[in-house]
Image (cartoon, rainbow, N blue to C red; front, top):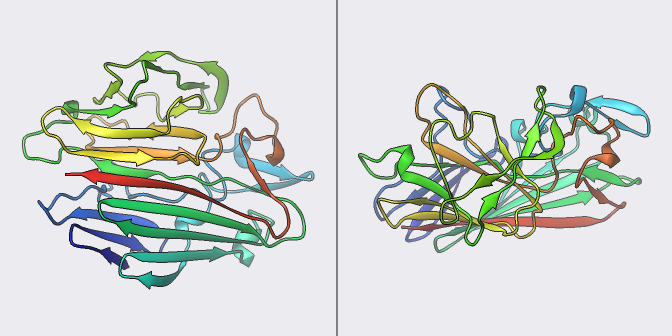
Length: 293
């Protein structure tokens, strides 16, 4: 485990998956990251790489060759190499191996850098193509932020705020949870999506036309908030598992790329929003989360 710390917050990141496991306020002892209770969800904040979401028939093709890869990619399930940069910064590196090349044919270097600045945690995803052919990839976050920060609160006291937005238009999925070309219409209440047990009955809420690149988890009973800024990411999703009990967290998910659509073929270059890097090229996509407590 790698620990980042300042006077206000303590952040813990696991080398396994380079996964954020704790964002802890020293002020009042609030833990803002879901602690992976398997009764609801066994993860905290996995990194999605080199794909986002599900694949049609669990398969994609590169120049006609088919590959199978796990949902959300292998990055979340592998050990990353940590490099400390200071008390408040750490980098994690993942590169290709015989194991990854069975699922993903390219040579790559993916570096995720966490930096704690005051009440803000910045997460930078730098991906480099180390192959001699163009490389397609996808990357995203899946950070589970807790609800019920104070004793006696219910999940229905919470909402996800999109300031200035009147309605969301989530992509409709088919019976195989593949994306369609159709969208729903979900009016907001003063820019807020109320949270309840039924909010995610239909699985993730995937947004491909969101007019803002900032969202906050807010509570009507206190002034705390968790705010995510994700200007580098064109797509966004919200998710919490649908259970027969209240699940006290919501995942905020900036995505580079949309999951597969039932109307698409298997060619990776046809995925909606897929990124492409030329040989030797690198790009960095970042988002940050700020705690107001």
